[in-house]
Image 1 (cartoon, rainbow, N blue to C red):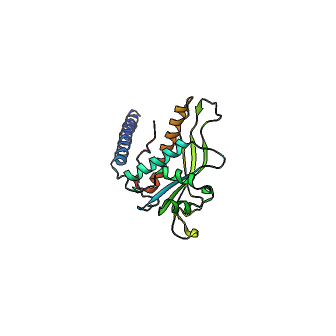
Image 2: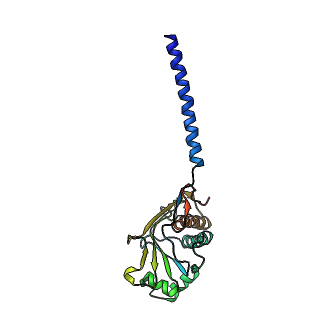
Image 3: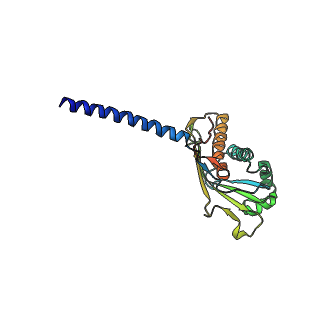
Amino acid sequence: MRRKIMALTALGAALTVLSGCANILGAMSYYLSPEHRQAALYEPTTNALAIIIDGAPTEPDHPLFRQALHDKIVALFRENNVNDDVVPYADQLDLQQRMPDYSSLTIQRIGRELGVEQVIHLQITSFSFRDTPSHPLVNPHVTLRVKVVDCNGPAKTARLWPETSEGWEVECSRPAQEASTVQALDEAAAKLGNDTAQLVARLFYDHTLEERVPTEK
């Protein structure tokens, strides 16, 4: 009986060692295995391009959110060799002021007015910042839909990507934080714009799935 107990104990110890080795080998296999690459979901033109951002009808967003979103996408496109010929955000604002009927124009028409080949259209569908204007905390959250539109072809085939007419949904949120001053509100809006840009831009270039999506601190 005693020998049987000793044998079972030895067997248990051996299995424990083997289990530990298996865990170590599994971890080594993970870190030594090739990186998993996600190809770009769509490759936009390398010619003139515009990034048009439209707000949600009933939920006003923040102007610095749009500015940061646009400028960060432009920077990421340059960094990842997607496109370095994006129309400046100021040109879009100028077009809005010059054309009284801007809100009624199609994305194709806006793109033609800006002299671009394609438009990446970002339609904000929901935007929440704080519960009430006097609330000291902000809970930044945005949902938007992304489309790529051809500016020169027939209207019926203007949407180049994605296949669904609703567009590709992107959602971004940041942790709640205190923002009791105008400066703090502006910074929170810009950070949300930068974080959202990371999610939008990587739709258009190859990236490593294991890589953590950068976020503002």
